[in-house]
Length: 363
Ligand code: TXA
Ligand code: MG
Image (cartoon, rainbow, N blue to C red; front, side):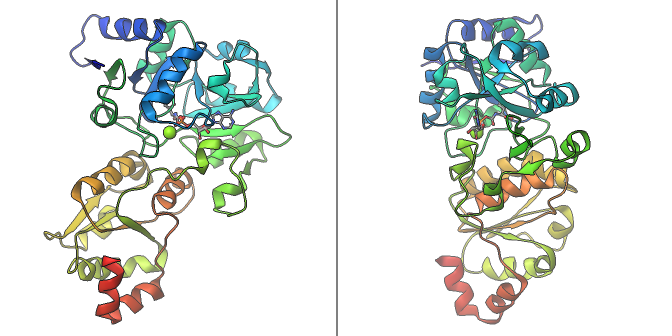
């Protein structure tokens, strides 16, 4: 399939979005930017169109999709009724990076809800996304525009790397501002539950709702089955084995990275301060995200993909505290690392024994 490419920087008369929206209306799948990550959109009320999304991504059919709308009131026809909490959240955080799980109405196709009696709805704030939905005149079902299992794309180039030839088109609107996906809140129960941390922080939710719970599966509790079906998959995993280094252990990271790079190519994902204390060599790739968590959120997915391209054996990633956007970022980083962490003592032991370090790097 020929994948049409529209660059909004060179589109002066608005034809790009009209053409892209027309393809959606016709039942095709088209990628477009949102404030969080790029989405792969199709007419959310057309089951056959929605199936094209699953096909292009190689997505398991038991993983439901988010319906994207352009006006708050448009949720009313998608739901059999909103709880008070849902109303508060919509009022406070839409448009923006928040998805609410609500009881679904009968017009939502089974392909979208994957057989559940609830549906996920979000009103994005990105002007391109909003205009696409408005022009298409229908809720747009859109997962992240990556091949299933890979990190979500935050720029058009990455979407093309995964989707060229598999989808009808892509609208290039530059780099996404948030960089991690929307926060998903289940509003159907007594107490609202965060199923996936994201662009709207837990603190922001608590400020308007009071009590908010975290899905226990987010804490890595083995027995807990995540309530968002997509959260059970091993997402975001780079090819190399990856370790999170945080707190006290960070002080030893520069030396560990330097020593490890003697045996194989290594990448370090870190902020400016750690980056400055390290020396780049042919075998030691330093991916510097900058100064704060917000920068890390914007860059993490691109850095994980970059590690694959660099062909490193091992990745060390600096962890940040889990307040604000840190909760979402660390959720993704820990998943990418398969929950592997290196403590200060473990690093110490590796540094003391060169043959042990070698087998750690090469295993
Ligand atoms: O920021 C975002 O949310 C991006 C942009 C494109 O809007 N979209 C996105 O979609 O991340 P996706 O499909 O990659 O992730 C949606 C998640 C999945 O984990 C899915 O299982 C969960 O939402 N989900 C969808 N419907 C649900 C439902 N009814 N109940 C529980 N979880 C649901
Ligand atoms: Mg996704």
